[in-house]
Image (cartoon, rainbow, N blue to C red; front, top):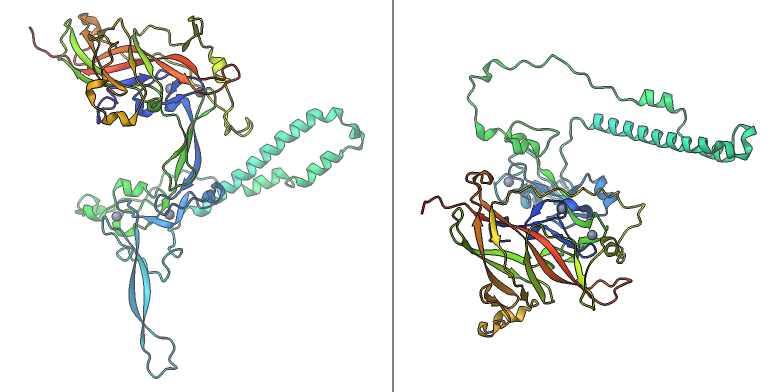
Amino acid sequence: MAYLFQIDCVRYACSCGSLKSIAKIYFCRHCLSIRCGYCVCHEVDSYYCSNCLENPPASEVRLKKYKCSNCFDCPCCFETLSIRSGQVLVKSLHTTQEESKPVTKKIYYLSCTLCRWSSRDAGIPDQTVATGSWREQESPNTYRITALINFYKILGSIEKQQKERKKFQSKRIFLQFEKFGITSTMARKRVGQLPLLQSNTQSDQPQPSEASEEIEELSQDIFTKSIDITKITTLDQRLQHPELQVENINELRPQRKQFIVKRSQRCRFCEHTVSKPDYCPTSTKFKIQLAAFYHVPELRIVACEPLRLGYSSELLLKFCNPTQHQTQIILLSMDTPMMPTTTTLQGIKEEINRENVQMGCDSPNLLPSAVRQAIVVEEGRQVNIVINAEVILPSSSFILPPRDDAAEYDDPSDSQNSQDDPKLVVWRKGNKAIIRLDVIPYVDKDKMVKDEPIVVGLAMQYGYINTIATLEHKAPQKLDLKVKLFLTLGNLVHNIL
Ligand SMILES: [Zn+2]
Ligand SMILES: [Zn+2]
Ligand SMILES: [Zn+2]
Ligand SMILES: [Zn+2]
């Protein structure tokens, strides 16, 4: 995040080649890599209604067609409808008493607090019970859709049986009771089969739909009649209920509220979960949350002098360490290899083998491989961005202290680090530091695209403490990780000096 409303000023490069702001990426602790939305599997954990917070099990959700049975959306503005109650006078049916006294009866209707739509305006009769009695509009094609679904279910089961039979036939030669024509296993299978599959499919096949060239003629006054736009439904309103797509506002009917989902994200490379929300719909907490802004130092652009071709401009960048461990930041050029490295006790730098990292430990919530969906890994692509300015990289590194929420309130005077290079670090407080860099937009006209914003690229190496215990490393392991960053600095200033 660079600014509150311009989150794409600083972008982090994912291993797949996409560029995302830090708010939109994950950090897989097992692969020690940044993972974007394309590099994680999105899995539905639970369904719930955003209004009444009901969360039925998945099988029930399917029966309810992914809609809440108690809550309705306004067909006009799509807000949640509220149930209002009123009273009406009804003549008592019990005439045994001397006078038929009118009795008050409670009735309910639906009303939208935002656009004032109400079920009474639409001509829906009031109900005597608050929930459960509101009928949903029937789709005119329900019969056809059910017939098609049933037919394809039959087709599916036939296909499955044929596959099983093929498997069985290939094994057949090894069976002992071949000479009797039928084996015991085969006989058992026959009992479970649908009788006479071929003829069955023929008769159950729904009527195929036919294309027709004859269409209803438009009425004569279609071009001359004046239209009252307030009485005609908008495209959004029609598409909210695609089966009916009514034309007039007064034909709109309340829609059952769609269930929304809680998703968990799983790394496609090592299959460990990077984000898992709490199952309960009332909770906004996470069981696992490996969002990158908890693990990777955040970079923001503080200020940048006006940019001129071939002239150096000062750029102030603010770094923030979100972890509980001190980290050392080194800024490197874009062509640095991105392999994570570690320094051994002997002081030798060595590269970390990714395969060893991935095999680290099994996540306890990893499903058996037969249940999980097959994981498709996208091949990494080149980052497709034109860098049109050079950044003068500092020769020294700087330290970011661990995050300490209480340090926010400390006296800022004692927060200067004496080891800092005063030319590089201009400000420091708690786990944050501002550094000064110089940027020179390329003079090379061929590389410049007119009015394109100036983009600089650099690689950031940061220290990371891996607290996951593996077979090889029981103690927390100190690693040096790298990430490529792309900063959009703004447009050139077009004045000649
Ligand atoms: Zn990615
Ligand atoms: Zn609901
Ligand atoms: Zn409304
Ligand atoms: Zn991973």
